[in-house]
Image (cartoon, rainbow, N blue to C red):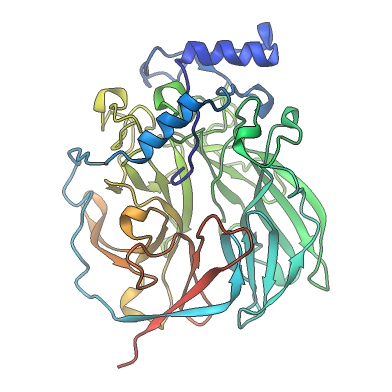
Length: 475
């Protein structure tokens, strides 16, 4: 979770379990589950808390001055880790053979702390704003109004809007799918700032669905489809109408990866790519249906803080995830596969410690198609298929949030090899003349073939973030 100063400090796995029991009185109700066969021991051993629901998620302690000191020190750490890639071209690709001049235009009215954007069939634009909800813009980007009816109370801390996905048949169904986060129910109204937490609660990601009213002002028939147990992620609708969701484990400064092995636990939805139908039911083709102790919603294991999902022209699902300090990954997501975290990683702990002894590969665990050190902090992404930039067709564009990269949009071009799809070129597209740029949260292709890029500059409670429009540079 890049740029979040989660200044809490975890103890070892055992201490974390003791804390959970002390706080919640779980006692004999707490179930201990072994890691999957072949996963191997991580850190202090293979045992970890199973998470049947967010009520049982162990909580790190509240902030103290010592914890804040550790967080400040880690913020200043220099990421100079350069692990050996598994194959040529897995990192630091050259510039693409064709670099196309482009212009950046400011589009529409200012927005406030956006997470994602989505175009409706008529060209209007939905903007999910983390602290305000769902805003509707007209075709020219002029703000119309906020849509009411979301299951959120923004007066309470931790209630935030995340992703917005119109149904592929929206013109007929009027259905909107959305991700949002709420704190666990026992947190109550925990206050406006992190320091108000008696115990630091994770941010719980929920999947919802509703119908947009005929006047476009209200969500009706709102239904909760899934509690993912996890932190912020992304969601995308497949061509068959089903939904794929990224759900990460607790991740951030002060969290040691070896203490949060939920990405490998089959009884937890944290750290997974999840797959559900549009009504919340389980698709018949999910790989772990009927397998004892494995949640049937799981499509793939071993994910960290993934905030990017996109389908390519072949219908393949891709995801980009934030590693800890370095080791951000681009993965081609396949049914039933395990993407390794935290058994293998190309990143380090924020403390500088190696993860699992610096192991970057293991039999049975998937390699990323590409990884970055240091971290660009990938957020929303899209494959380009328009005609405005014919040279960009088939390329992947990824929003980035890290100041180390100047907060640019990454363009990746690809080539096919006998060993699989490989990155052929990498280009960084700047959104402003400011050397530090802007924090970029999402990027989408518009109906006109332009790329629409969403800035998120924090803290910014009053608005002032912008949508940028990338068009060919005039000769």
